[in-house]
Length: 352
Image 1 (tube, rainbow, N blue to C red):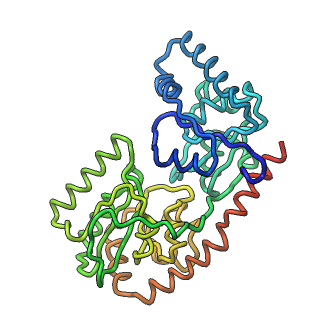
Image 2 (cartoon, rainbow, N blue to C red; image 1 turned 90 degrees about the vertical axis):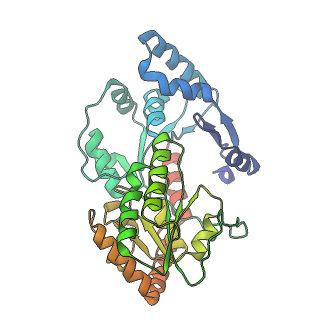
Image 3 (cartoon, rainbow, N blue to C red; image 1 turned 60 degrees about the vertical axis):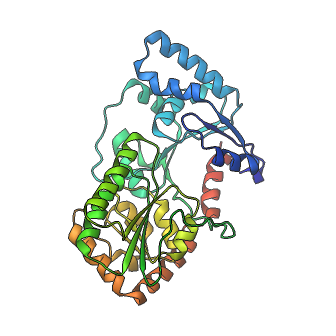
């Protein structure tokens, strides 16, 4: 966007990752951290009517200070609050993103805040077709008003490669990897139960990710306890958040994702870009991004034994792993190009 003449400001409200902020600043973005606004966003529901009015006045003034042309709220809470008042900021357009996945979406009862958001008519964008259909049903929005723009696969800079965060002997091993923070919907427990059931002896499992919420930390510790209690310490490794992701993908054999729901999962795009077969639950978000050849190895939603069988099958079939990985690599390079995603967003912005 900066190359097309846009000035981009990135605002953080809740967490401050100094290394990430430094990287953004290094490549020329205006980066600001506003924890006071973030705290008020978090406490909004507990405010009195007067306090809410004061908050709206201050928040609109804060947004106007950027003199925005386009606003792109990221998380659901910030999206709802921002898009309720975006037309008072002077912006020409504000996006409302749908990045999640749904199995059984139901129409929600709109509170007054989301009614205001709906009346303000933000530009709705979903990163998957099933996400768009779910959003239309949940929020009672005409499907024609929701633009579907899938995530893109960006070829990583392989010249930057950190060392492994732990010492792991990978010689003569089939390496399974799962890139996912420990949110409930990622369902690491499902994976670990299948791993225990598989009784594989020639494979290792690398779990990459953590997550900053209390629930993520709890799930992380529970997964560690499961591994310890079942004697899997020499097979399953918790690597946490790491900058060595691309190096790990280059030494992996199979990409895993046991999520209950997904929109357009970046982890799967990364697996495909690294030339890996993908083993996952058979859910809409996974099916939308995979080529037909890889879909045949997806497992049933509740089929732990099926996942265990498929892991054993892939462990023993190197030729199949290589063939599926190459099909996946070609698919992601052809169908999830950054240029197409950029052009789709640029078309929406240019129309205003």
